[in-house]
Amino acid sequence: MSQSLHPFTPSTRSVRSPNLTSSPFKQCYSSPKLSLPINNRRFPVTSVKLSIRASYSSDLDPTSSQVLLASSNGKSFVGGVSSPATQTLPSPDSGSIEVDSVTETELKENGFRSTRRTKLVCTIGPATSGFDQLEALAVGGMNVARINMCHGTREWHRGVIERVRRLNEEKGYAVAIMMDTEGSEIHMGDLGGASSAKAEDGEIWTFSVRAFNSALPERTINVNYDGFAEDVKVGDELLVDGGMVRFEVVEKIGPDVKCRCTDPGLLLPRANLTFWRDGSLVRERNAMLPTISSKDWLDIDFGIAEGVDFIAISFVKSAEVIKHLKSYIAARAHDGDIAVIAKIESMDSLKNLEEIIQASDGAMVARGDLGAQIPLEQVPSAQQKIVQLCRQLNTPVIVASQLLESMIEYPTPTRAEVADVSEAVRQRADALMLSGESAMGQYPEKALAVLRSVSLRIERWWREEKRHEAMELPDIGTSFSNTISEEICNSAAKMANKLEVDALFVYTKTGHMASLLSRCRPDCPIFAFTATTSARRRLNLQWGLIPFRLSFSDDMESNLNKTFSLLKARNLIKSVYV
Image (cartoon, rainbow, N blue to C red; front, side, top):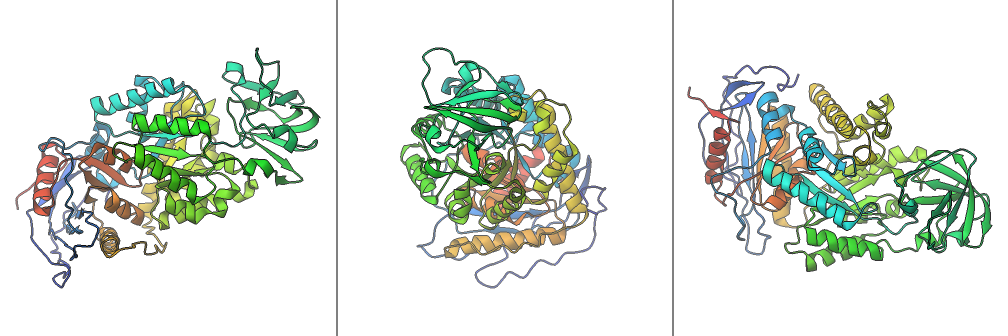
């Protein structure tokens, strides 16, 4: 049984430090005993701190990180340092450490090992755009706020960004902002300004590429793709928003396509459209559309100017698109700290999956649109493949779309939805995402609470059953220094599991070392200490990372002493004398 669930009995057994005296590693120093708060009780920590410094030459990448294992059960600390950096970082107040109040309270009340590892993303819409609503989501566990450029104006999204930034500044949160582009696939128009429209069984609707100078005629929908009427044929099946509403094409009249509703449902502005013929997706000209439309480029410029943390690109077809966008951002962003997320939601994405993931800073399994392009029964296996490949390639992955779809209208989810969320947590995805549930649903806070409680329960079950990872993680380091960092993190995670320690501490300037630890999915949480607010926010997307901000140096002993002093001042750990 995991020690996070029951009070600790302090151990008096001595722990022999690993022999790391041979080159390129060396043992450096030891430290006094500490204790960590577990279930409102404090127990001594018998610690042996080791510094592991990798030998390096002048041509190695000078990225610096430090790693430490922390335990409250009488077992050991083990730490490591990769090649020291030479760059100068902007430093926050040298006498402070930043962590949001919700995480701090959770650590004090429940203990380090009982913290949630799976991160939560909430789409912000009319139901959650106010400051109080955003704060309620942050209190409920929101790690990333997503703004969807398919809906709303840039001014509206700018207001949301400003309120999230204000929330972080005033309340100490590290909520990151993800901007999601619309993409250039076939979309419906804005429904003449209406928030939604209901299509009933048997009704005839007109899908048209015409531009209307006046109000749209009744049961008429604009389509953004000029070749739409030419590509479809009578008898084709038209799917709205991945199949939430279905139509059959019954007649073509010039630029207008008459369709009969066969599966009724709610039509939403800017919903994605796909059409099928003889059981197969019709791609043709649709497949030739550019991944990033002219509107998307304007939205990307907006995101760069506003300093968002992530930009998610819809309907990615190749790695070249991602590389081009990253070069564009690097040339225009002030600090180049915007990460690019590839949305996997088309057959082209699946065909070039590994190359796309390798080029990206993160990936999203957009199951709604993906389910409109591949047979429904293939979606679960595609999800598992994407999650596993992202894990192997050290790329954060988000599972999205229809996780708790029923909670848009109802206060409790279906049991099948809970099972679906549980499976994503068991697959060890970095994050789960709410879409309409939080953007326009009637119960956004309850939906978030469901994700949080299910994640916590499945993660606790995993620890209780001691289901350590069986997945073989391939070597991904491409340089000597990166290989050393990777080996240090792999070893640290294995030791953390074996010794049942309560936390891994990592000091990281770029976030790379923290991501390598997250990739290993250790049983304990990872305290990621970084010197910049932007890095702290980006780390908030990755599995198991609890990001702190503080200033630190390349001297590990100084970093540790400072960290312990600041954590003790926050009442998170306590020195004891024996």
